[in-house]
Each structure stands twice: as C-alpha cells, then as structure tokens.
Length: 87
Image 1 (tube, one colour):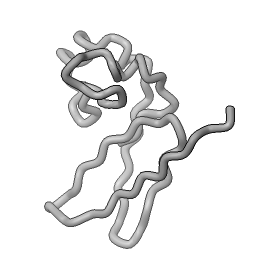
Image 2 (cartoon, rainbow, N blue to C red; image 1 turned 60 degrees about the vertical axis):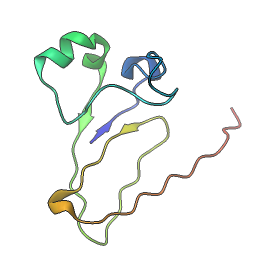
Image 3 (cartoon, rainbow, N blue to C red; image 1 turned 45 degrees about the vertical axis):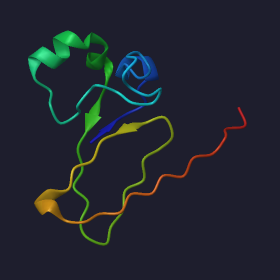
C-alpha cells in the first residue's frame, strides 16, 4: 500500500521516542476507526493498494510512504535507493 505525497508529520514519523525518525506507528493495512481516531492526521492521506505479480516491480516516488505485505509467504526483494536532494 502506498500513501501518496503525505507529509512526515501526518504519518507521525519521529514523534515517538521508541521509533526512529522515519518510522511510523501507522499500519496502512489496518484502517479501523480506533486507529483513525488515535492518529487524526491520517485522514489527510490517500491510500492506494496494488498487487504486483511475480517478475514485476513497482516504482514508489519520492516522499511517498509505503508498506508491503507478501501474499502466500512468498519471498520478495525490496531495494531502496537513497540520495541527497539538490533542493
């Protein structure tokens, strides 16, 4: 699942001491009313779901938050390329 163009503070990243600066307590797979009440800024997010078939890939643009889950316990490979922005 991908949360599009969401600001870091809307995902509560870096807010809790027990989480790293880019970790979020929000589970994009769990959109129950209790989580939405607890994390009110989450309502500002658009969440997209995609199923990627074997041999395919998905491009996640900069500043998008993502969460993935493997179906049928299949192995998967996830590569992240981090770079410094010039702006």
